[in-house]
Length: 340
Image 1 (cartoon, rainbow, N blue to C red):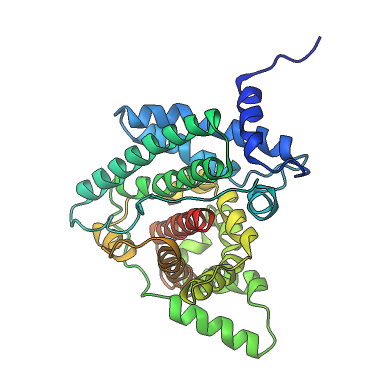
Image 2: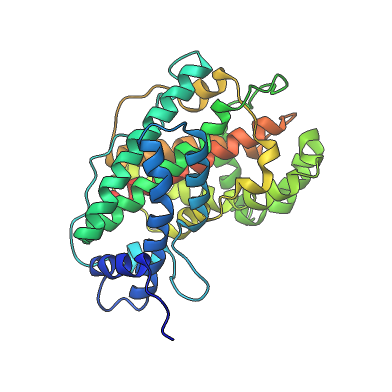
């Protein structure tokens, strides 16, 4: 008997129209993207309708593991789609940035409420964009719906930090770390050393300087975190290019960082962070878009990566919060890249 045709196949047939006819993985990519959109639709509808935000946001965060649109036996990854798979057409962006100013209030409850309202707004936008993509699949529609999902997952990663009870033993965050991280990259490059391959050295130093890094749950956490060295090199390239008015091209580390996000493997590390941390990591900023927004997100992501690189006496809550901030900033940076 022939296999029953599901709604994902009908949606994939519509989405394929936004991909190049000669793109080798056109059908596989369209199906993978269709499944991702359908998986995100139900929790987005519940979130947009005013349901308590915790459960739908947790479901949406799980979508991050497939947001790279990659499969071993088919879809080659969203970086390949952006580079070679989109049919001719304009990209567009009319979206406000969801992260700056999350820490504007000194109240954790107000910070959580702000995160939830921004997530509900983005969920409504995602639903609208998904409908448009199903009815009128063009490159702009595909890019916009994917970028919207990136922004939702960014907010979903931050939400537990604001919704869970505050950890009384959270301690303090490391000082801003972007400048020190970039110096480390430069010094290693001058010495002929590969910064991207320093994962084991980094782990050994974290274990020596942080009791939290010697806990059993830290292993699965670091397995994902170790790729942030490679990610940091790409973030720097995008930031520096954006400052000169151009766009870097090393998409795969950014795309891979989103698809590698699996906090379910270390959920016991994630606890409520102090309100002051939110103000530190997500301060009020002037509204910007395009390359200016890309530069700002990359700089903030490098700051989080730098703090993680040099962490000393950092709590498990601090490690988790910085990893969430790094993911959220990277996801939003990728969204800007897609739409610029």
